[in-house]
Image 1 (tube, rainbow, N blue to C red):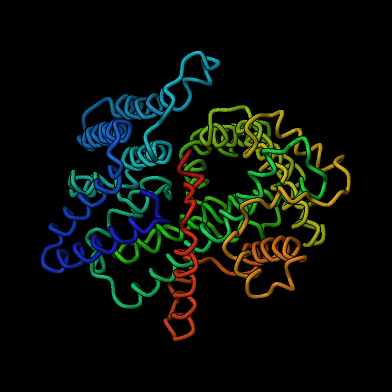
Image 2: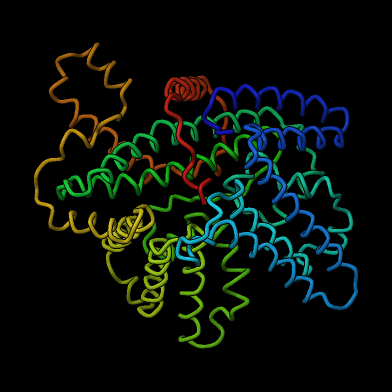
Length: 481
C-alpha cells in the first residue's frame, strides 16, 4: 500500500488509534496488534504474488530466527550455520532478482517480493551481529519470535528500509515511549510525514515527469534539455527516497519508535567519499561492516584496499538492480573513491566551491547510468548533454508537469500564460536545489521540533497540497530495488 494515498492515511489513523489504546493497557497486546496491522499493510492488495512474497519473507525470517538461536547455543559449527543462513538469504535474492541477468534473459522469475533487497541485508546484519556477540546472547535469549517478526514486517520500513542493526530496533520495543509517544514526539512525527509527503508528491513526482519525458524522446534532446533531464533525475531520486525515509520516520515516531538517520544533505558533499557518508547512510554502514571490514578493509596495503573499495561498490550497484547500468554506476563510484584515496590530502587543498562542484557534477553524471534502461540510452543522454546544441527545450519536456498548479495560474493570472513554461522550470528546479542544498536533515530536526502556530499552518498547507496532488500516484523508486 503506497504511503501517498488516502487509503493509507485512513488505515494508518485507525491503526495508530487502536495500537496506542491497546499499548496503554498492555504492551504485549499493543505489539500483537501492530504486528497484525503490519501484515495487513503488506498484504493489502492480496494478489497471489503478494501472498507468495509474504511467504518468502516469512520463511527467511524463520531461517534467521533458527540460525540465531543456534549461534547462541554454544554448540560447535557456528561458522557453518552462519554461512548456511547467509547463503540462504543471498540465494533467494539471486533467484528472484538476478535469474534473468545470469541467464541472459532466457529464464526469469519476473517479479520479486516487496522489500526483498532490504530484507536480505537486514537479515545478514542481524546474523552477523549475533555471531560476533555485538547483539549478545542474552539479548537474543530475551527476544521473542513475535518481536523478531515485527522487526521484519514493521510497515513503515518493510519496503524500503532504512536497514537497521538489531540494537536500532529491538531495545525500543521495551522502552518507555513504545506505543506511548508524548506530544512532542507526536508533533515531530506529523511534521516529518508532511515534509516527506511534500518531497515525494510535490517535488519527486514533478521532476519525474520531466525525466520520463526526456527518456521518451532521447533522439530529440538538446544540450539544455539533456542537462534538465540529468539534474531532474538527481533531484527526483533524492526527494523520492529521502521523502520515503521522512515519512517512515514520522510514522514510526508516532508509534514510539525512532529510526536511524538515512540522509544528511548528500548534495552538499565535498567529495564522493563524503557523499556516501550522507547518502543512504544505513546501506553504507552495512557494506562497511559486513563486506568491507571482513574483506580486510584498509589493513592489507593500498592495492588490497582499492580492490575492497571496488568490491563493495560493485556489490552496491548490483544490489540496486540486475543490469550493466547499475554495475557501471557502482563501478564509477568505486573508481572515484579509489582516486580520492590515491590523491589523499592534496584534494583538500582545492577551493571548497571547486570540490563541491566537481563532486556534484560527478554524482549527476553517474546517476544517468542508474536511471537509463540501457547503457546505450545513458550514452545518448550524455552525448546530447555535450553535443546536443543550444536549442531551448521543446514543450513536450514539460508534458504532465504540475498540471493543477499551471491551470490555477492560468485562471488567476492569465497575463503570465506566455511565461508559464520558463516560470515552471525555473520555479521547480530552483525550489528543488534550494530544498536539497540549504536545510538541515529532517529526521535530526525532529528531535528539536517545537510546534508553533506558523509551523502548524505550514504543516497543514503541505498536507493539503500533497493530498490534492495524490492523483497519478507513483511508487517510491527504491521499492523497486
